[in-house]
Image 1: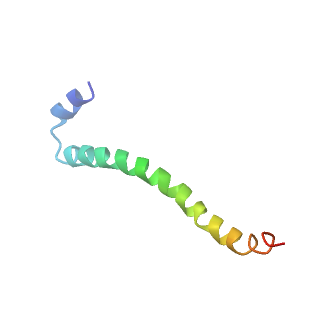
Image 2: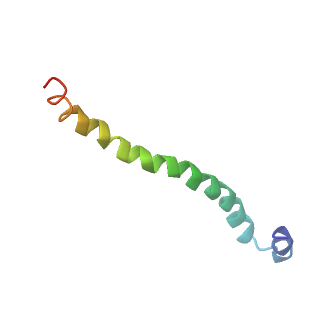
Length: 57
């Protein structure tokens, strides 16, 4: 039913906006996993230093 109102609108701005929405929906989904990737980077840095001394000790 969402497509029905879009057809009568016939607005040129609405058409491009809809197309972007489809891509945007996929973008946030792929961006979500990117967020956890950032905190994961600092994780290896921390253990790299403090993890080395306690390991041999």
